[in-house]
Length: 323
Length: 238
Image: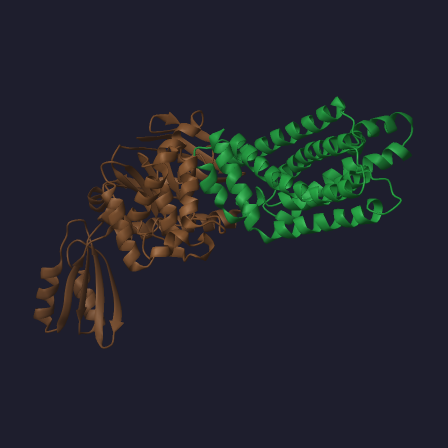
């Protein structure tokens, strides 16, 4: 449904998106994940014909974004990161205006507007459709933006940070709404919050520093990023003796310790697939050290994501210092 | 065409909600009214509309930029340009829609001066030909001025900058060219006379049907609308 090949976008000398390629199948929900400034919004703006690529070929719903831009825009609905609206217009009036631009026949317009408003919870309170856009709260403006996107029931939906500025209840209903679009629509959404996209998306594309850092289903990603195991234990005992005892175990790469009150917290980095929990318990029992915690930590997607974000910021800092 | 009209309607409705448009409209009517009562509507004066049209043309040098300054600038500043340009509309439709929208408001403003026409018809015998051609000239001049203002507002997200740029461009053609016609040496004064907006407008305000005026204002309108479209298109590449 969406096909991106060797896409590069430069703003002057700054490279925002650096030679990325990906493909999105029809009917799937794809999450674009990355720290701020990673190039997510730029990519989405190119998909929706708001910006032109410097290099590369992008096709959406079978149309080229450059040569058949109007056809692409007819088949997509794009909700920008910060939804901005004409403050002087009323909600209903604005949606009718947008429906006209979307080539919805005059007779079908009112029905389309009402349908979209209902899906986006705009019919409550009763006078909502008559309120001025400039007077709406952030959350309601977001809903109007979403209703606008759903008006013409487009096959492709591009949502840039759809849940930003919403309260927790609204985030949940937004999530349900996006999930209800699965199958009929191809949805591509961006976020810098992992937990959010992990739940909704069939496929994740992690982007950092303008490049694709990883991509795959959430499960596949989680498997691929689980690094070496880590064991955390809290014992009471002589720090030197503990370090010596643990350090002598087989397959231990690194041991760190930190005082927690009068307990000693040790973190053991082991080889891949190693598990030192039994040995630690045995050692503590032998030496008579009280043991109050012993657990294995598995590298999460979150860790991986933070790692990428960290790498990007280090790189950016490096580039700045080189300038 | 349908989308152009939808865009034009929204733009026109926007004017009727904007306090700025009312202030400009009121000032325009006040200034032209003062001129009307000072220079025309007096016993002993000729019942001619010519001085009124010429005064209105000069007022428009400052009034139209204030009407057009927000057209595209405001879309850039508020970010609505993003939703607008990702809808299936072309740059040409957007520019033409905005142009027609302002022209709608401009015509409403001109209609307001019809009051003077009624007054003078009651108390004297004005020349009907001057009235018709004068208004026609005002419409053509307005179209050219509005397209200059529209172009200026595609250049910047700041309304004030857009207004200053368009007042500058209009002043060059409406005021400076007139001075250059008088003060510059031989071949240049001819060139300045050819570029002087008011030379062409004066033909209309005298009740003449002059094709040079049609061509001058028509081509100026087309040129600046074309430049506006190109300017708006160039945004995608920056």
